Image (cartoon, rainbow, N blue to C red; front, side, top):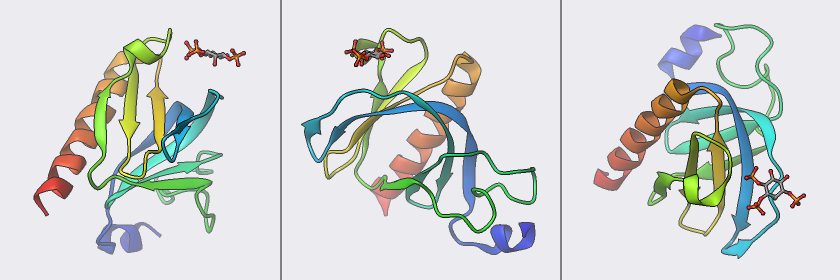
Amino acid sequence: SLPQVLDDPHEVEKSGLLNVTKIALGGRPCRKNWNPSWVVLAGNSLMFYREPPPAAPSSIWGPAGSRPESSVDLRGAALAHGRHLSSRRNVLHIRTVPGHEFLLQSDQETELRAWHRALRAVIERLDRE
Ligand code: I3S
């Protein structure tokens, strides 16, 4: 429920639908496979869900009771524009410490800028911790 989410120390910073592809796993490049994903930024994690939640705002996490399809630890992660890595517009590139790399993309420039700011703020906070 919403009150539980608000009480959670890992409060959701941002969530939304983005196009996502992994480009490397553990430092090894892998083939792109763009897919829409419901992405949730909370605590030190970025979580990827296959489906958006059924109805906002009571379930801004993933679909009720579900686990993310995957999740990465943003501590020490590097964030950059991904324009050199894709022909798509509005692309962000994230590389985590264990060498997982992925691209996030939105056709809406303002939305991708908002993700860039939110991710940068979380990564900078984690750097100071
Ligand atoms: O970086 P690339 O190789 O240009 O990425 C494109 C390919 O991965 C392509 O798949 P196949 O070559 O496996 O069929 C994808 O369909 C494209 O989406 C990739 O490029 P963009 O520019 O969309 O990231």
